[in-house]
Length: 264
Image (cartoon, rainbow, N blue to C red; front, side):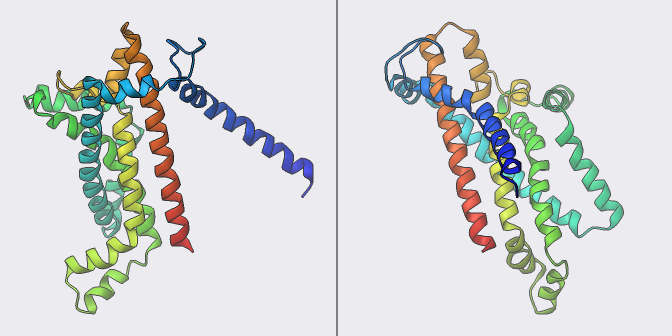
């Protein structure tokens, strides 16, 4: 291949990477300074990280947000996986209905989903907002379809007859599901679980409409904090953004390494 043909895509790739990651790198850089705002000169400091992990309010928000994300992801992974398996072994008409129903929450705006869940559960059914149930259900509506989309390609790559073969060899339906089908789709289940965690951590609109008044997620807290005048809290959020970015980067690298080993 001509060197010019290689150089142009490479330069374009470098430009896109810089465009995507330069703002994040700037944020990470300033999280290790004592500057009051981005653009100001500042010296090296870990004060933002000290504030992040010692401020009681921020620590409580971190624990609450990650606990919510894990709970929602576990429930979404269970229902999304069961839904994908049920759809895969269903007839054409029922499978079409499943797929259409799953696509609506994916393409729908988060603000519409959050407002709809709020009206349905809190207004129509009169559910107490302080029970956290509307918040969990609302985020499950957001996350479960993406688990379904992560598991379904693995099911399509699997031979659909191996389930019947397991039954013919003496396995019960439950054993065939656990030891054959779930083993085949397990990478998709893990991928859906990690996607659900990221969606839950990133969610703002659904949490805003459904969360209890005394509870804040990272997203809702960040939006409210940036409107205030507490400089110490604002700069600690730079450290929080850095921690989240590094956490996601580590998860992605581990998942890619694991997938590469499985393929080999």
